[in-house]
Length: 201
Image (cartoon, rainbow, N blue to C red; front, side, top):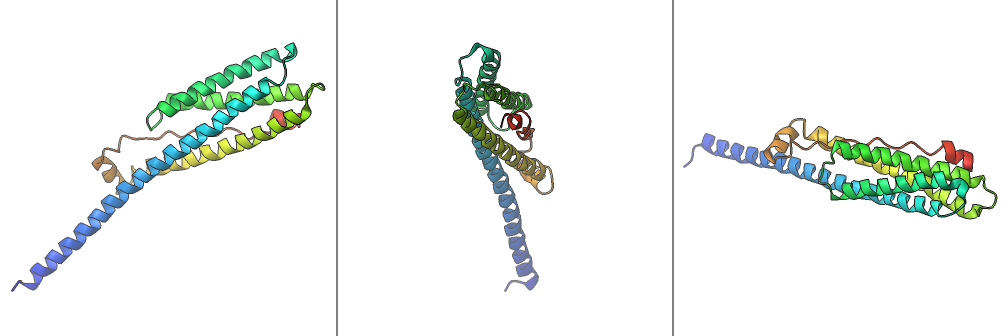
């Protein structure tokens, strides 16, 4: 017959093994889910920004007058720039490179301003169909808000992963599964549309 202390030790070892397994598996699955959420939010953010590119091109096509050529040229150039950045973001492996994130922040800021500037100029042109312009202005506000929401959600998930993988016990789990080198840079959210668009409404 086995001695009681041997049975007790075996039970304790089994319990500790189960607890350790749950901690490791739970921590690892948590980091994987976080990565998956980051990837999903990044894709949703790209979709909103792609819609902004399309809207910018629609706005640019509203008038062929020479007076708006400078603003239209600048907006078209910015739209192509943002589209190029979005293509690179889609092809890049997570986490995104800090330089690419900065290019995205710049392009996003420029296209928002470019749309507002051209919309303001077109709004002052009495010969333009104001109904079409108002629809685009409303869509731009909605897209701008959606981009802000997506960026904040992305940053929330990035912060969660970065923090979880650096703190106990996540730091050991991240190292065990070679996730400790991953750091997700946060994205600066664009400003709410107020300035030029507000003056154009």
